[in-house]
Length: 272
Length: 305
Ligand SMILES: Cc1cc2nc3c(=O)[nH]c(=O)nc-3n(C[C@H](O)[C@H](O)[C@H](O)COP(=O)(O)OP(=O)(O)OC[C@H]3O[C@@H](n4cnc5c(N)ncnc54)[C@H](O)[C@@H]3O)c2cc1C
Ligand SMILES: Cc1cc2nc3c(=O)[nH]c(=O)nc-3n(C[C@H](O)[C@H](O)[C@H](O)COP(=O)(O)O)c2cc1C
Ligand code: FES
Image 1 (cartoon, rainbow over the protein chains, first blue to last red):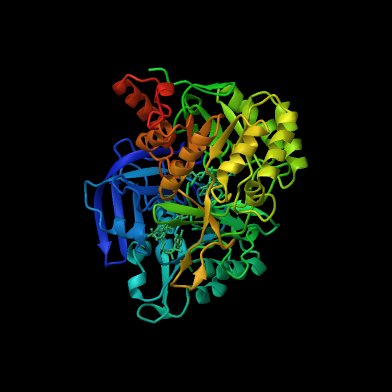
Image 2 (image 1 turned 120 degrees about the vertical axis):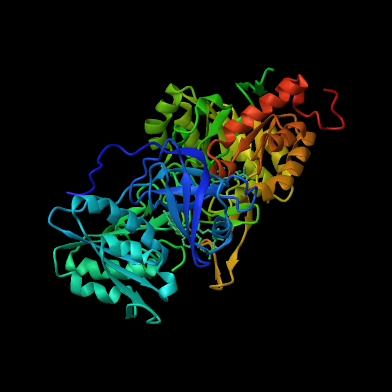
């Protein structure tokens, strides 16, 4: 029913694109929109490796970022956590960036008869908002659960509300229900639903743990540190339930949560 | 100007190769540029049986470099020969198989498997991986053991054998000389140097393996010094590796006397890095009216070239 686009994924390419605009939502969250006249066939769930063309040796490696949109004005939503994202947060229109993509797989098709439930934590909202927007033209309106530490950590919640039935939680109670986003989930899991989640590992591990016993399919988009983004550095392993590793950049980033060994909640590394 | 370089019996189209572990099995770069334009590629380290590698986190960025503790995850030599090599050969890619084992016996078995697979141009012995508990760096520290591995592999193949040096091999010149005497056709230098990183915000060591190999520009001056020393001490060719990100970086190694260079971590920053290094060297040669072989060692005071 959804994910209309079953044509083969576009080959990965590195392009140099100028920043068209930066929309900042406070100091921590920024949407970067690029000018790509020829367009990028980037689908919801896919990501791009981003590096300022003038960064020199620092930061050295490009940073993986989910597409918030594709086409001729592809965009990303960044949260400032370190050097790379700080540089991005200061970027000005016209500044050149290397964009390598599209990389990774897409969110899988929503199963016929199931309603998608999107569970987002902080900046994990980006690939989920892109998903919700792509479902809207097909008449699918997901339920979205969106959590953050405070109301300042809910970038783009208004945009999410346009295309989803949105429920918000904050740990300090400054918006929506006080507590964690996972507390809203159990009630929903009795219905004919399917879960799509992106956020801190501990949140996704908790979501996966709620879905598994109820046999609800749960797809998690993993944000492990990456050096290459296309399967050569082997730096992005995720523990596989049956042993061995999956690689977030090639097997994912969208992976069935049941195939992952979430361990103590830090299976995919990264910040929680 | 002529870009060819000769390493013992092997002639490469140009002096630019890609470093093991940073270029997969080569085909991953297909959509970025024609890999066959390079002097060659070194495969991810191949072992006798496939290996899963270390748990996460395996990588983290450090000033002008990165640490990795991949733990030599790879598909195994059999799978490589069956499924990767034929395509590489069809594309005309010059393939250097980088291999790794924890015993002399297994080094020999892998070499024998490669010997009967058409499409391999040379074998690079990794006796210097810092990220595995067995068969890594301790091999690379011991001149006698390195010589033994080299001789044993030489005995079962016609292919050129390159030995990859560990910068942590106490007396690296002694190790390299032992390999030369044992019949090595070239040495490649250097592999990564072990480093660490701790995240103050969590108080935790960043890599699960605790230590990881440092690569990237941070390594370059150390690598250049080692290459310089090796070139001065050996008769066999030396291949320079360590933080080559641009043609200027590569030229430093060539001027120091390296017969070729390998581009590693740079491919992560820019997947077309190796191609750009190749083009940059060609442009430099054209501007200075020099062939690459005339360039090699030109930075040495003893150079009459
Ligand atoms: C497929 C994928 C999609 C992603 N999508 C987005 C996105 O849409 N928006 C966004 O803001 N971020 C996203 N990330 C995370 C983003 O890549 C990192 O936050 C970024 O690389 C940090 O770079 P930095 O230089 O600012 O921080 P660094 O200086 O590299 O690190 C600062 C701190 O952040 C932690 N960190 C580093 N990498 C990650 C990571 N991958 N995940 C979590 N914490 C990390 C480090 O451990 C360190 O404590 C995504 C990651 C992946 C793998
Ligand atoms: C992620 C990664 C994986 C590596 N894997 C191997 C390997 O399997 N075998 C090997 O001999 N060297 C391996 N190396 C070392 C590189 O081949 C090279 O010697 C080193 O990175 C220094 O070069 P650079 O600074 O250009 O990266 C690896 C390096 C990195 C960064
Ligand atoms: S990021 Fe390099 S293999 Fe996944």
